[in-house]
Image (cartoon, rainbow, N blue to C red):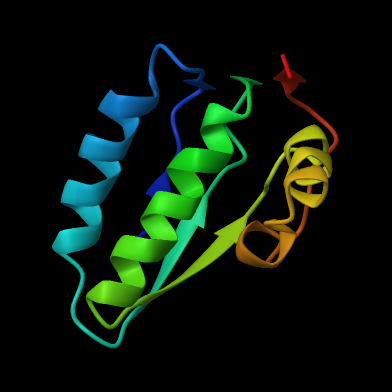
Length: 102
């Protein structure tokens, strides 16, 4: 199955729409699936991107699925550590890019 793609921008402005779109994609995945999420295209973000990913983890678990996040921007990984959610978002490699606006 192809990976779900995070949008290029997730800030407080885009977070609700991102959750709706990604949750819809997630719901189409079979129960028990490990769903790959490609975060490598995420270029602009704030802490709302973490909220989106945490919500996706919650929805995945509720549906008997799990997430594997790949390509998380380094700065978003750092924010995840500060907020105490690194274990939810730190699977896979982390590129150096992304213009985080924490």
